[in-house]
Image 1 (spheres, rainbow, N blue to C red):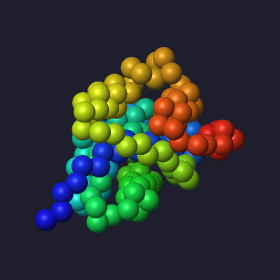
Image 2 (cartoon, rainbow, N blue to C red; image 1 turned 90 degrees about the vertical axis):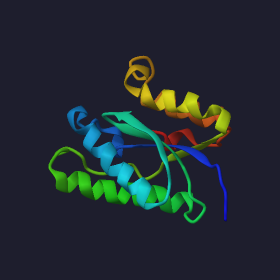
Image 3 (spheres, rainbow, N blue to C red; image 1 turned 120 degrees about the vertical axis):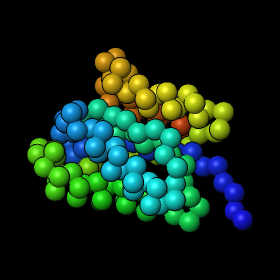
Image 4 (cartoon, rainbow, N blue to C red; image 1 turned 45 degrees about the vertical axis):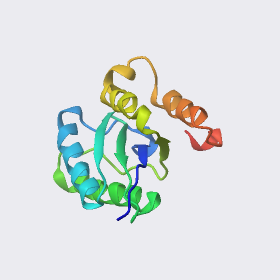
Length: 147
């Protein structure tokens, strides 16, 4: 038996940060993504976002790489969003993503952070949030790719 505890907060936005995730259909999108997470043998702790990006807080099953996990979520949800008719202005997800690891002691804090995205973004823009997350997690980045 293999045991693991690998918590990830995954963040990615819409192409060109366009506000194309209609708030009235977010729950349908989140439920769809929750199914993708389950199909990858991962556990979803929280998903939320606003009109131009989402946060997924989940564990990562050891049988799947982070890159494959995120790719599966993005490809499947991209197709579903286009075919559902619920997101007529959605083009696609941005090419990249941010993924940040957390300990079990930080789990509840991150769940609350993701849960409160709509309130949080009344004070901080996505660009500033993303840059802050990269800095806080000691991730090297080139600012030209954040735009």
